[in-house]
Amino acid sequence: MSVAENKTGRVARRRQKNLKALISAGQAVMGEKGIDAATMHEIAERADVGAGTIYTYFKSKDELAIAVLERLMHELALKIEQVTDTFDDPAQVYAFGIRTVIDTATSDLRWKQLLNRAEVIANAMFHRMGPFAIRDLENATEAGRFKVDNAALTWKMATHAIVGVALSVTNDECPEFTIDETVVRLLCMTGIGREEARELAARPRPALPNA
Amino acid sequence: MSVAENKTGRVARRRQKNLKALISAGQAVMGEKGIDAATMHEIAERADVGAGTIYTYFKSKDELAIAVLERLMHELALKIEQVTDTFDDPAQVYAFGIRTVIDTATSDLRWKQLLNRAEVIANAMFHRMGPFAIRDLENATEAGRFKVDNAALTWKMATHAIVGVALSVTNDECPEFTIDETVVRLLCMTGIGREEARELAARPRPALPNA
DNA sequence: GTCAAAAATGAATAACGTTCAAAAAAACGA
DNA sequence: TCGTTTTTTTGAACGTTATTCATTTTTGAC
Image (cartoon, rainbow over all chains, first blue to last red; front, side, top):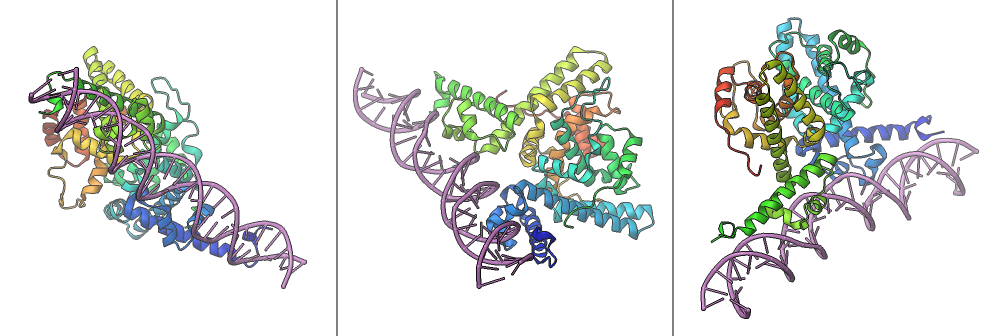
């Protein structure tokens, strides 16, 4: 019987607390200094755990960065949902949505820093969006369409996804801003047709861990 | 009298050769492994120089990465110009232009790897495109427009520029593909009006060093 | 309290970018 | 050609940092 399943759950609670503390510390340090300059030792210290302890929670610095990014995305999603819940007037939703995304991307969360690691973000995106985006695309060789390899697709997805979330809503042609609509647009950018993208975006996404 | 200006110029030639060898080695290693995983020691070994010698040519690994990116961009520009020179039919120019850009971005040059360092690329872009893109934008606070800080703008520029060069030409709405037209579009993305962007793009750009 | 499993720890390791004192090469005057 | 000065190269050494691992601590069942 593993400790995590224990009746009291004291260990599980401590692990949960440490996990949250580590992600918070990672978010703080990486946000201030960027991923490269953030050191695992400082993150451990801020989370009040030993240096080696991090590695019982995350396999590597990159995995921690992924977790941080996931939290950022989750927080952003919550804020946007709040905006769409608060206002009825599409113009207001649009205005406040833009403001929220831009504020998030430029100050609080320093996505530009996180962008330094396109591969980390790619993995995070895949984890978040699920496998549906690549399903039929991996070896797409339609007539007149170039063949994309996995790595290139990963990069394309990641870049488009982040840029799309952060900036596509600044496009004047997009008065109806919702998260799902953005996902649809991102999927379209990968080459999927609009109808299929809409269908895929409508599927339930897995819940975020440790939110 | 400095050695570089010497009559014989033997040293200058050797320096030139080493410089090219270093950029080639950097291109090869960074292309294979990505900038992060590429080590200065391996690059030095492939260029057949001592480990410390690199630092008489480049101030840092990032500067070397910039030089590599500049060469990549120059090579891509040459290929595109060749395409536009070879064909008269706009449809063919378009088709071959797309093919060239995509091939370049996905296999030969591994731009996706270079993207790992958005800031390096941003610097390279600024160096290449000159200061005109930021001139009037830095503290833009138009009504209804958000205030962008320098860092965010840098990131935005870099991301848009690379993604734009690599992917914007896959947009079906762009049948007339030229480098200048792409630059215009990139400038528009930063918020500059289309007319001003066109004027700025028409200005002569400085020649690439060490091509 | 005892014991085995799980978790935490931080000193040690390894890898890498960068520096620098020393050596080699080149340039120069005689 | 020789001696001297200047430039260039070199690679061992340094400092930093992600990661590992032997050891210690904590936990939960008996």
